[in-house]
Image 1 (cartoon, rainbow, N blue to C red):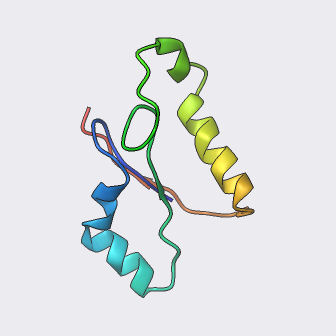
Image 2: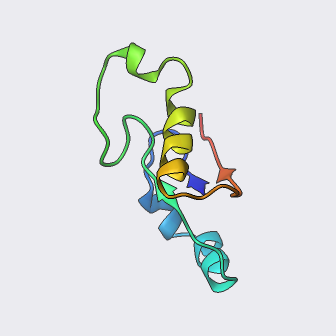
Length: 78
């Protein structure tokens, strides 16, 4: 799971050597757009980001994909 930083989106990872290196080593490269970025809804309502909403999105996605063990790499520019 590759998590992008502030004011970016999932496509930023696909332009990196890390993404290609992981794929070449047999890993699945899972990326997603965090709340308010990329192809997600862009709400100005701060409540949409409360209560660990982004973390819950990640957990829901991995549950949906039926992936129980995974590594997470992320970055922040904030």
